[in-house]
Image (spheres, rainbow, N blue to C red):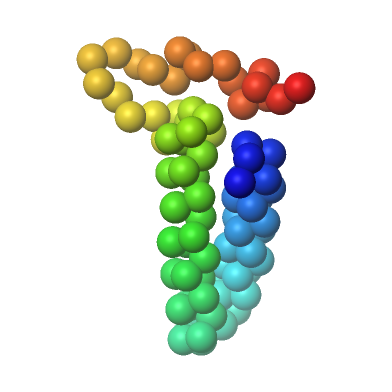
Length: 82
C-alpha cells in the first residue's frame, strides 16, 4: 500500500472501532462484538506500526524515543501530501 491507501485503511478501521465501541456501550456482554473489537484493534495497531515505520508517526503517541524527542524531526502528516 502507498501512503494514501494506508492512511485510508487506518481511518476505515478506526471508524469501525469507534462504531463498535458505541455498540459495546449498550451491549457490553456481546462476545461476538468483543471479539471483533479485538480483531479491529489488532489490525489498526499493525497498520499504524507500518505507517510509522515507512512514513513517520501519526501522533506523538507513536514516537519512539531514544536520546531526543523525534516527533518534530519529520514533516507533519499534512506536509507530506501533495
